[in-house]
Amino acid sequence: MARIEPITSRVVLFGHPLHPALVHFPIAALVGLVGTDLAYVLTGDFFWARAGLWLAGTGAAGGTIAGLVGLLDLLTVWRIRRLVTAGIHAVLAVMLLSLAALNWLLRFGDPAANILPWGLYLSVLSFGLIMMLGHLGARLVYEYAVGVDLDEAMTAKPKP
Image: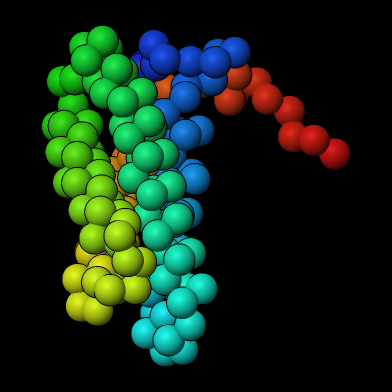
């Protein structure tokens, strides 16, 4: 079996790629947004609408930061740029950020006014895009070794 040549990220902190580290909070916020929308629909409690406003904003803002870091890698590392999977991942990420920003803007003046139907619809659609993006991101890591230090992975000793 041929050894995969890893693709090194250019945007790193202490040798670790930043994009995969930054996506967790926006993902959690946008997934949680589906829950707060459903909780508001089921209970009518304004707390859930207000929480949804914050989660939508956190998802949009945090996703923008993570997306810009990913874009830097896409633009500066030619081996990433040549991967169709990376291009599709980038396009879907822009779509997700657009939906997240729209969802936040719909809630900004009155957090509860647009949860039904558009807020919940955008939240569920965003969740679907997150699932697709996660699959593509995993393919970039596990099939193409983007941002993976194979030498370190192969010599790492399990902790007792």
